Length: 412
Ligand SMILES: Cc1ncc(COP(=O)(O)O)c(C=O)c1O
Image (tube, rainbow, N blue to C red; front, top):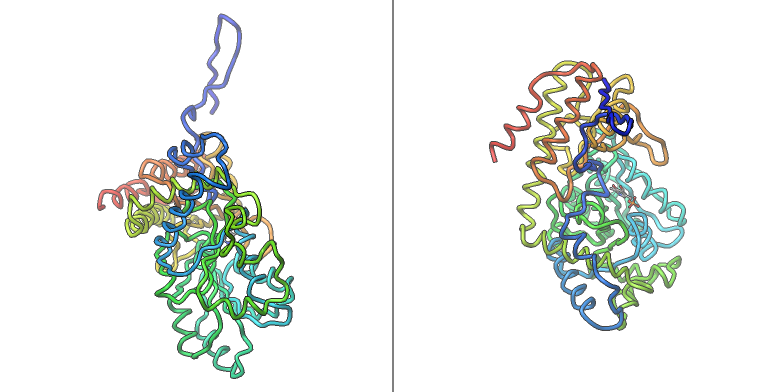
């Protein structure tokens, strides 16, 4: 219903609206940028050859490695997640090399397709989008590879398309059980600084990530965190080019060499503040906060699902990401909910993505991003706005969703 408020004196008629406050972007990345990060970027251009930016970046990168729980090396690119993917592949693999890709979502598929485009033979071990990576099949494939032709295993910790979380430890255990020397390469683009992660302890050889999700910084910085084991493959990788090459980025003496050219000055200033915030919070607390907010979302959606067709796409709670939740509906209700929430409440929900790499949008799904800079009013507000959409659009749903979400917060 539209109510009209008329301003008699100047005869201007404007529609009354409720969403006069701050809009909220509830998509699974880019995530909300904290005011502290925005303020840190509000500076004149810094020198890129000497001065405070260089020390600040060094401290920030040390912080990132503490967050990753890695004693390896950090390599950065001016780029997005796709850049992090390609950097990892170009530095380690050559045309004709064999890898295994564990795929149960769109992003796992997309990474594999990029490897194939680089001439790599990718053996896809696929699982349904609602099921974990198939480690039994991985173990068999590695055991069958007695001459160790397989150079790497690729996996995605959180596939943002369907909000499934894969267990890195189980994959590493399968590789160890097969006593196979392949490198373990993990996409943590959606999970970094959201989900529990131990790069060293879990034997991750290359971790790929980017700054725009759990790291709360505007898009544009991509990272590879590498172990000592990568160099043997790196030195043989025949498709690597100077721009992507890890070596000058690790060894370069001039600051710009670490970025293959001009450093992304203001992203580094923003990231430095974001890393400071995460370290002040303590990464274990950050993981716990993500879990609390995720449980809030699951409690609400599970309550809605008691009557009608709206439900969490991943029914097994142990496989649900704490960074994003995909929500399935019927009759293209998902798209109607997104449109209503955006227009009437200022909440932008994430679009549904078809699980297949390169496929389009899924109008029977929407996603709530609960990663990064998030507090109870943001998450309870988002859920309440979706609840309002369900009422306004006459979409059948169970009662008590907001109470269920509040109970989760109350219990912390
Ligand atoms: C798990 C995962 N991998 C890779 C990507 C690709 O990242 P980008 O869009 O920044 O290139 C995304 C993007 O959302 C993602 O969620």
